[in-house]
Image (tube, rainbow, N blue to C red):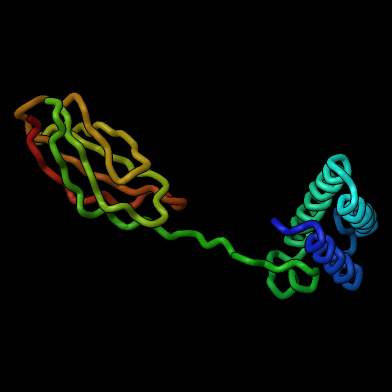
Length: 194
C-alpha cells in the first residue's frame, strides 16, 4: 500500500464508512473500526502539523502513517477471510481484490538442451530454454551405458557439470520444478567429455 498520507486518510475513511454499513458481513472487524478511526484522526492532525512544522512533526506523521497502514492491512486480512476473496464482497468493504493468484500448472518438458566445452578439461556447460513459472531445474547426468544418475540443481537456464572423465560419453537430462512439482525430463542429450 503506497499512498501519500492524504490519500491514505481518504482511503481509510472510505473503508471505515463501508465497513460500518456492512455490519452483517463484518460483525467483529479486527482491528475495530473505532481503533481505525482514532488512528486516522490522529494522522490527520499529524499531517496538518507536519505541513507547518519541522523534522519532529514529519517524523510523528510518518510514524502514525506506518501504524495506520498496518491497521488497514490487518483489516484487509480480516475482510479477505470473511468473504473468501470474493471480489464483489471485497468491494462492499471498501477494499478491492486487485489480483487473484493463479497456480501455474504442471511444468512442460525442458527443450533445447545443448552443451558447450569450457576451457577446462572434464567440464561441460549445459544450457536449455527456460520455462515460465519454473522455480528451479533438476539436472542429471550419467556415463553412457550405466544406470546411476548424478543429480544437481540450478535456478537458471544453465549449469556447469564438472569432474567428467575425458573421452567418455555422457547422457544429460533436465526437468523443471514448479509450484506443483517436477515436470517431465527433457530428451536425453549425449556428448563426449574432453
